[in-house]
Image 1 (cartoon, rainbow, N blue to C red):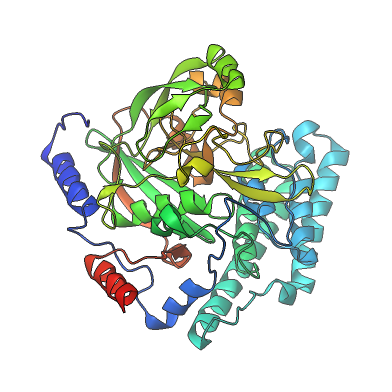
Image 2 (image 1 turned 45 degrees about the vertical axis):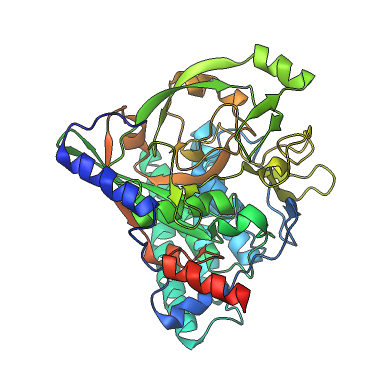
Amino acid sequence: VSEGDSDWSTSRSNIRRALLSWGVLTSATVAAEPALAARRQVFLTRSKDTTAAVKDEPIKVLAESSDISSEVCLLRLLPVKNPVFRALGDNIERVSAVRNAQNNETWTKANNAAGYALELLDSKRSQLEPVFNYEDNAEVQIRKGERGEQLIEALRFKIEALVNATKERDETTTFEEQSRALFALSEVGELMVKEYPYLIPKEDKFSYLPRLQGRAKVTFTFKRGRAILGNVTIEADGFIAPITAGNFVDLANRGFYTGLPMRSFKKKLGAAPSVLSFADGGFLGLDPESLEAEKNAVTVPLSILGSFQEGFYDPLTAKPRRIPLEILRLDKKSGKPELSYSRNFFNLPSLEASVDAPKDNKPVLNFDIPGMMVFNHPDKNVNGGSAEFFSLQKNSAAAENSNLMNGQYAPFGFIVDGYDLYQNLKPGDVIDATYCSEWGLLNLIKIRGTSFSDVLQSGNEETE
């Protein structure tokens, strides 16, 4: 149950959110222009499997990497094999050599790597142009091409700044420009993805869930009391958790999060149940291995955003929307990443594991990555998440026990701006406003309509 609100503006937000959840208010159309609506059909879901493997494009292992940044994750997670694109990324990453040792040799290598990246971009620029899908109409292709040119030019500007920073041997500026260059390159890479690489379940309860088949930026403005603290921008990544990221972007676009405060909850880490029932939300029991984990579990306070009563009430079902635990794992045999879901999300209760993937298939991402955004769920129901999310704050008790959270919560994005502000947020700080990128919303796919008229139309089609 939500706590009492101190002012009318917050109460008004809660009233609006409740009406919105029940379908009295409808969300904005994802792609209002008919010419752009076709792009929503570029990436079609087409699998009923509980676990679906990536097709062709392998990604590098991130689960066991140390000191890896969010911008590097965004770059490596892209299913793009283009050799020029990858060579640019490798050379920009090589600038990191000065982190370990700063001397003439490392600074020279860093400057050479940045310089080579700039030369490569200038000489092979045409090979970084967007990939056009056969579903793209003329207008979409034009807009894609224009955006591609803008992003490539922005990338060149940032690499040039990186070259100058390494030449001046300015440590702070070098790492800032390196981060900007990696982010810029990942944006260029998004337009180079030939097709969405995963097969996402779309039957049963999955049919009601939006999915993000690409990436989208969501910016929150935070306030403390009457004072505006600033903005935090999250890159929701459908390449690591399409349903989880899709739900997040959908709720952000509806304005669900606006007016909600950060709250502190006690979480039990390291004790994920093995037997769950989605139908009644009941907890049926633990196997011996989970019982052992229960003994070693740690209870810590955790600051969480997006908490509101039971969660988001989906207008399609008139029930709280529940999101299955969705983890990108590396298949031990094939070496390829795959999405894993809880089988109990849509099957009858059974004694099978909650995550339908071998336990030695390690998560691709772990909680050592700074700025990683994660979806929350009740301690004893991994499929019970609805709207809450968090990122670990440094020096918190949860961060000290982050190893207990790997594979138990679904990463769905990264903080790309406002990281320091987020680290200093406190319970009671409020999301004052929400902004979603127009381009990113084109990647938000909904199998079923989201308004009452859509539901009626769907029902008529089924009876014909």
